[in-house]
Length: 558
Length: 74
Picture 1 (tube, rainbow over the protein chains, first blue to last red):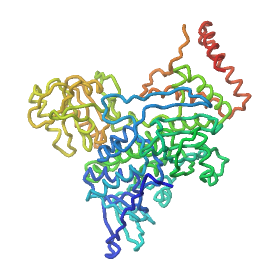
Picture 2: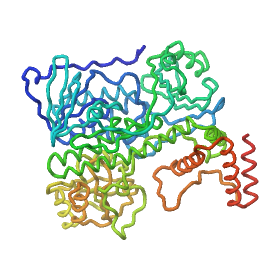
Picture 3: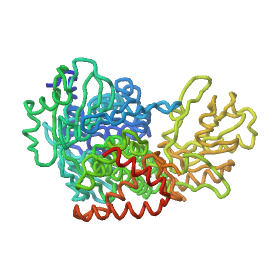
Picture 4: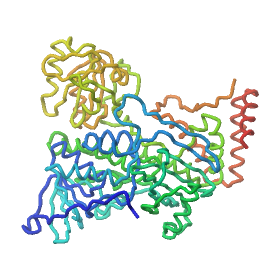
């Protein structure tokens, strides 16, 4: 099988510690070089922290696995330097078709919201994402990426984590201040530390197949409920890169998975689905079950859990890798501040709190999709089918059809890091404290760009001005002063008018006022933006002391 | 009052960041209400629910329209 993709084999090098017998001491170890572990390593590298990244294997994900990368993940991947590679290789799709039994009940066209850099999602086989991330990590001297290095024991003593790492040439010891466990759903680190993860396993199985279509087939998402070629179950067809289509067949619990994935059993299913003599070739096939569960907390002393190691959801809605990348996004800057002694370790509790809030939202949404797609009782199935029968003719029915709600980032409105709006400051729109930032087109010294590519990795104070050249000296000096001090805040003026600000305060032009509109900004409105591009606070009038207090709050220094 | 066939769920005081959330909230409540009931009990629950909602709507014209739409698709 597998014709369109050649798996890279990453080079193993004998770790120098094996010959020297010395214990390797590093500030941070990341275990697991999947999308999330690579993301975490890249995030910390951007923060200036050297990382040791260990993986027991020496290649990328086998088979497509994660398929759909949503807008927020793409924006994070931009920050990690692989957004363009993922978007240019990935397949954009807008049209989705929903079938119930013999007929198409409706279709939708997810026209991308204009004036955002990244689309709502792209489809791409997980192995490409991992390949791009691994290449990026390998190009950076501060990431020591070691393939075929397997962690076989882990112990936490005080503020130090000690790992025993095995290779084909022998074992060595690593001591680290911080361990990030990105070692997947079965997380050996979690198990070795005796930590629990709770939730439920769904009594269902899915057969997934990557199929190469020989003829043209539209770049659309097709979802069947109870189709004649696979009665009583659901089927999803998705286009990926290289004309590889991903098909997910719901199997039910009683089917023998080993039998089901034999080509002689898979091929007739696909033929029946395509319904004609369309030529195709099978590349990869697998059967999976899934669990919906999460750890009670994601930080345990010096050990931080990210991605599937910390939380797992059903695949409906693409909330696995997408939410894992957001874990890395949330964790990197916090760990940097703690390592630098600029924030207390309790800041990492907020990593756990915020990402648990997001994980629970993902669990709710993916469980709802699962319950709609695979009803657990007769009455639930009746309601599901009633919704589908109403969907053909009525908008409200279509809105209730839940074949997976696309992954969107959580609005961290509950976070203790947020500074609530001042009384009397009235704002419309979505950019509340805790919101993931909306993008907007901007001009930077006349060059076209995007707001989200201009902020991130540190705190920013985004100051909306009517006319940058007319900003008074007091405001300019107060803005400039924000960049001095323990936790620097980068001032950035944004205005619908071209022009520069006095002093050396950088500025952006918002030529069509889209940023001002999305942030409901007036002259003098200020947003404090976190390094992970979430809104921390906002004011109608700029007061440097309030900004400093909000930074203190957002870093547990208040 | 004409029968509203557009998405119409909301909860007072709740701010939704995604259009699908209120409908999904309702649907989950609906399915959860049936949890652990026998098929016969579920049927009774559904009948009671229809009667409660019909009385709440009250307007016979609207109800007639809803009954017709429901019947058409069966």
